[in-house]
Length: 552
Image 1 (cartoon, rainbow, N blue to C red):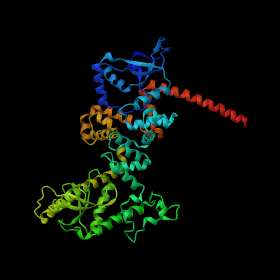
Image 2: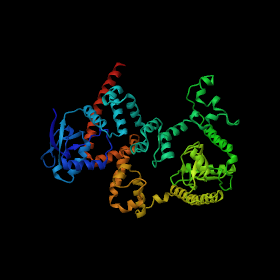
Image 3: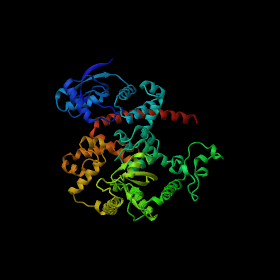
Image 4: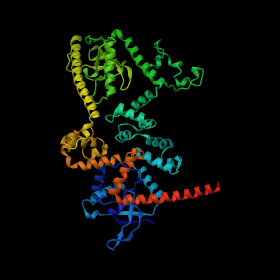
């Protein structure tokens, strides 16, 4: 029977079974303030996991009492807030608890129920909770009825377990939509890492259309390719409709009887065809395109590429440089988008476009690169506000001058990139550096600290006031050296909580080193329980094995 007791907080522990792993520190502090003002309106629910024990100290002969231990079933957020107050005042050393007798299965069920009924439930934790319920033998139909969700909702949430940690962080920061995250979760780890590294790298959001476009390109979906509507645009490039590399042509003799899904199994051919199609569309515009070395004049169009960005990776930089070189070699002028003020988002057929073109407010551009592949696109850009719009000659000179300034800027960036690449090779070859026996310099310590912080999770960085991309990390490290041990411990915690620990024997060894030293009571209790449980299983299996061997 349930009872309410006041239990010392030092005897209460959080449960490793709790599917909720993320807590907003600011909201915990706000809850602590409310508890301080109004009291704890709802006690936490705990279960006893060890009874009070006594034993004799071998050295002193005294009888030593070991207090019982309790595990939180419901209310970890309230407990964390109460614990904050307990660190400030002794009046919070005990917390009101509802004590229930519960098995592991019952406690786990209660934890999941409480977490899934929250309004702010994290979709990733929701996925983990539903998965655990399924693994414990619950039918998906029963879970759906129990939590008032559709079967499809449960199945879709469970798919999120397949996301890599970087994309999980993006989902939690709402940088990718849940619908897009579910699509990415279906991809293998390498494809997910490619999407993260090549497309967003954690620096920007990705929309559902961005994700679908990436997946269509990844799987070479023919009927989503830009060239699909003009499949026979070139006599020198095979048509996809009858190509053996088209999956729709497998297992059936007649093309018109194929299934709807068409994918190319020859990525090299698919990518080459898209590139050639863009060049084909450009050549159709050739008469109206600004030629290499000519000034921009109204009434003409110019090939445009997105300007190089500081966050572009090496592949992206090379793509842009290769595109500029290729279209220059074809005889056309190429400009970066930052020679203009900004893009006009009206559709090409909009009458407002025609009016602005007539008033020399816009310039017609032909974009030849999407964010990850060649793509032909007509766009319109406003002229710089500082430019005089009296005539085509003045405007073209202003744009040409801006284009030169951008090339000068890019030239400086190339120098930095070359320097970076040279030093990267130095670091790769500099084996004598690691053998130095002298103490670390101040610069070396700063470098190490920044590298450690860069590997800590965004929630921790936010909690110490260091928002990714918004603060100089080197300055932060220099100004807050006294907190170094905190960063190191967060780094250790992060690394030992990653999924990779399940497959890395060295990380497993480090886990044992940490918890046996820092949390010996919890560690010893766990190992004792596991050894007992698994030795019983092994004993039963050995007994059965002997029976089978004796029957042979």
